[in-house]
Image (cartoon, rainbow, N blue to C red):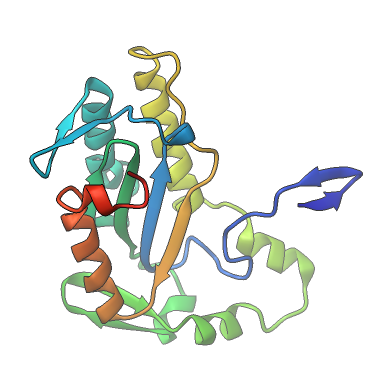
Amino acid sequence: MNLFNNKYRIESPRFSEWDYSSNGIYFITICTNRKEHFFGKIQNEKMEFSSIGLITKQFLIDVPKHFEYVKLNASVVMPNHVHVLLTINTPKNEIFKNNHKCIQDEDIFIDVRKTLQCNFSTDNIDQRMSKISPKKGSIPTIIRSYKSAVTREARKIDLDFAWQERFHDHIVRDKTTYHKIKRYILDNPKNWESDKFY
């Protein structure tokens, strides 16, 4: 925690020098508050959804309908958390044009070091703040919108429903990591008992 304007604040877990509206592949994990099992249970290595779980799953599937340049590569709703591997691929993103390679099926991997050099070659503080502030179509705005929509509907069923305030993200930088994460997501239900969220 840092002191700011005579108040303590918790630093953001986001990578402070990364523009989270940039094109790339992101692995996101969102947990329920206190990791409570609102979404259902694992039975015979398969997820059996509660009513809230069905809402959570459908709203996740619907994310690309609300964010034009987002693609879901893999996702899973577990009893107390959601994993999603998603791609942001915005044609307007000028920075990205010289700092990427396209792999099959629009799976995009980023050389973060090159992109950071491109993004932060200036000492202009206003530009830096602009880069890290939440933007339309950025990971923080996508997740905030998703969590808000699920919460609104879930609380019609259970007033105690809540998410953890934060979420975990990982910028996927290579094909090997991409496939490893995708396999982890798809196998999550059958590996539930050994999962750290169990």
